[in-house]
Image (tube, rainbow, N blue to C red):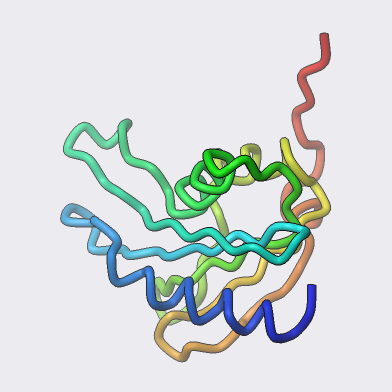
Length: 134
């Protein structure tokens, strides 16, 4: 992935974050997942009054890309801020992403400062990934 694609994904994640539906937590998250061919798909968190039906931005972006026929992912950019810091993806999102590429880059952007705080591999923050094999 080139620098221009990453910069575009960061801008898209920050922009789409404005569309998050978070009336309960007021914690808005935007995500942009980058495919190996350079396509970018976005997603936001969508809360629900039953909480269990809430969906994270990372999975929304992933599901959007899968719906479009994509399966090869290179990176995900996550734009958020909680207590002044960018936030890591939850465990469910880590597992969903790892099913496609456990070596995917995870780029954390602080939505307050608009700066990248961390750029690391999914396998670094999610060791011992669950693999279901028949």
